[in-house]
Length: 426
Image (tube, rainbow, N blue to C red; front, side, top):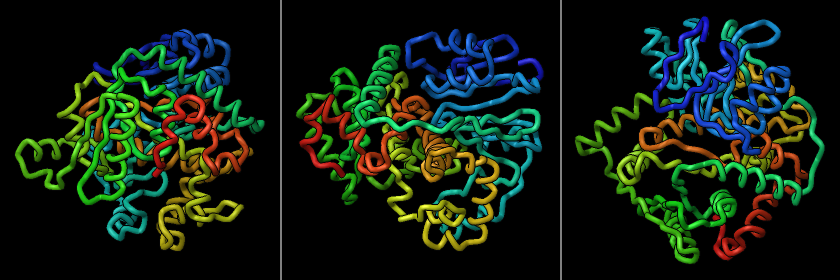
């Protein structure tokens, strides 16, 4: 890569799209079935703006490097929801897919006391505000940004313009057409979770409840929500004749030597522990050639934060802090870190999108969810069917009332798998 050295897992695809100019690391598909490299090459040769427009139609889990036409510096950006995590240290001029790997490579460790204090005090429900990490010199790149690898400055690449509202039916047809075009190109076996939630049901509808995929549900004794998931999932699997397995967590994980070794490995790959026991089940129960289809991301377009926390119409740093907890909105460290992230990410450049929706997309999905995926990477790769900006735009462009009611998802289910509505939604 000319002035840079890239070291990557040989199992992760790498493509030099335009020699010394554009590079793709990871798995990607074009929603229109075009060869991704060819489409991006043509767009880049037209203009940098054309490349970003084309990128809206690229789904997958990847990072893209491209050389800026204006200053010649190499830029890095991620897939739409930031499923491929990027940690970086501007002071060490280095970036990595993993936090601990970056600390190991740079040999520098500087604890970020304010962040560590927040986690210890549990003010933010184990979340870290903004793009920060427990190390003062390490940050996370978040979705909808391109970072200059010379200055490490961010540039917001979405939204690039205000949108025109569309109807629910228009969104449903566009999303289904895009996902169908995507699925025709995926040649891996799919591993699909079933829960009692609407997001899981939406994924099943987009997949048409096809029985040639492998389905599963995980549960744990005495956890009511998971018990409901298991009961509903079994009923759905039986009704649609889907191959389905249940993964039971026993609550005593980590006592056996092989489990301890697995936990030791996972502690090196993530800074936000989700469930090492679930990752263990993935690793031991399923082959590594599966592509795990997750159903996160729909809440980006359901006005989640506004409805969950009754936030006022005008957005503010206090409103951002409130999404962590009630006490967080008055915590000086949460407010300071959140304000820095708002400035760094240029969240104020939201056009007519709702900044709280963009914040959910870029912070919750781009930091918490991206870190969660690192746990299951030891077992298999993960993907989200709606992980392309073109699809996410369809969800966000319907009327606000339709977003609040989840009408696009409900209509998808009604149209393509109406039998799923016979089961209660959690």
